[in-house]
Length: 292
Image (cartoon, rainbow, N blue to C red; front, side, top):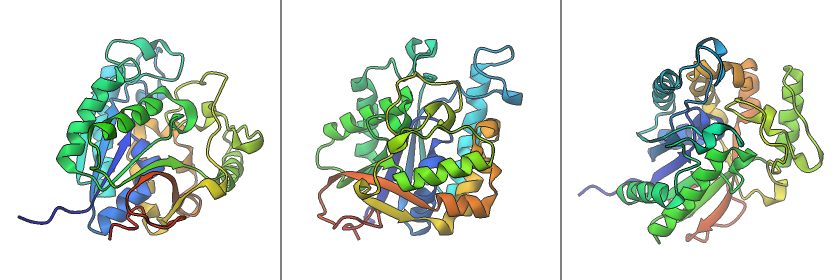
């Protein structure tokens, strides 16, 4: 029997999230021969429709939006070299406070135990060495991102000892300052209070609607970031993966930059290591440090 390959599993909320926070590591590790698995939890139906029509506006057909976004997600996976795409297909919950939060079948309204059980099946099937998802705040407070964290951590409890390393995506405060400067340069709104408590309404990749007024801090002080992965060599793939989500292009501000500037700004992906059985030293430059 062939030896099981080293495996990375990324658990994301919506189509396009895979490219924004982990496009570089998915492309890099695929190129290095590591098996990559993407789990996308929702159908993205609260994204923009054709012509930028927003949820609730005339002409926004959630089922059609979901079908289009699935095709875009599949195209993004081809660009990034993702080996396996798993779709949980929960309903997109929209931004915090939206009526969609409580809609039947929405991810936010799904019991954590139910989502965790489904994800645990995938953990047992793929036996990933590294699992990546969001932090407890969903990075910027989106309910589907928060729920992705919840079901991932609960699923790992249902598969004890299976995955040696677990990470949450994050952004160092130094990078948040650079993001703010670039966003203002390209005409995007950006509120940057102290400690990089940024506005989720302007930073949200879904770009769906302003979030609730009370927002969690985004990112961490640089010295609390445990893992810095250089993905500059894969900046073009990451850019093209984002561009594959053309229906959401109005909200993906990074595409305005061009590949060179984008790669300079987004060429290092950063994480917090929250579980580890390898004893690899910190800070680290490789999600698979201690495993190969």
